[in-house]
Length: 268
Image (cartoon, rainbow, N blue to C red):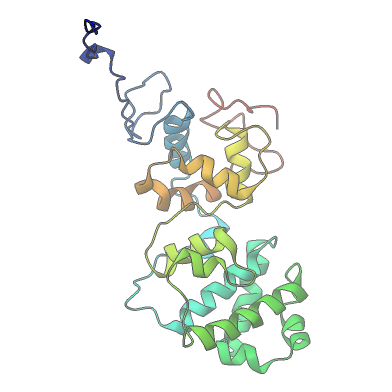
């Protein structure tokens, strides 16, 4: 039988290939779409580079309470002692659903008393709970801190793990605290620490699905387009802006440089 003729495969024209967009964070106009970043996808919000730069401008010279918190500053891993790392981890554990100034006050008092793994394990649960009574969920946090101290002493020779998986598995820690801890103590920017401020701003700016409340889902959605090299600054800038400008109640929409590109402007 004669062979059936087959048409040669059509090679795609170079002009048919999708053009890769590039994102630069130097523009403050959404109309400028010469924005570079290898991660950019159809889900990348067009307003983010402009909104981000505007937030940086508005926060120049502004000091937020967050900047006083122990985990805000980046440390040299080689110069940071295990005891200091443990103290910073405790500060993060105390901070959950508690105002920064109250967290800092309680943490400073613990440090004055000699906060360390052994010190924590010498206390009864009720003693430790009383010492941190100004923070929310004090009983639960006292239990978490003591359980974590036990694990660190028995499994890590009195130090803290330097990776997300083991840190996030510690009682009362989780992903957000682990990311912020790694950034502060080990110089690792492995992911976004989604706190109430980043959650609120991401929703207001339309950076995530409407009314997203799950911190891990918000983080995954944001990390799909936030340039990895900008994670460190995202973890520092956005919560500060949320504390000082785009507050939960009465945000300064009229004065905000983002009021023309924020879908929630004047509606909060």
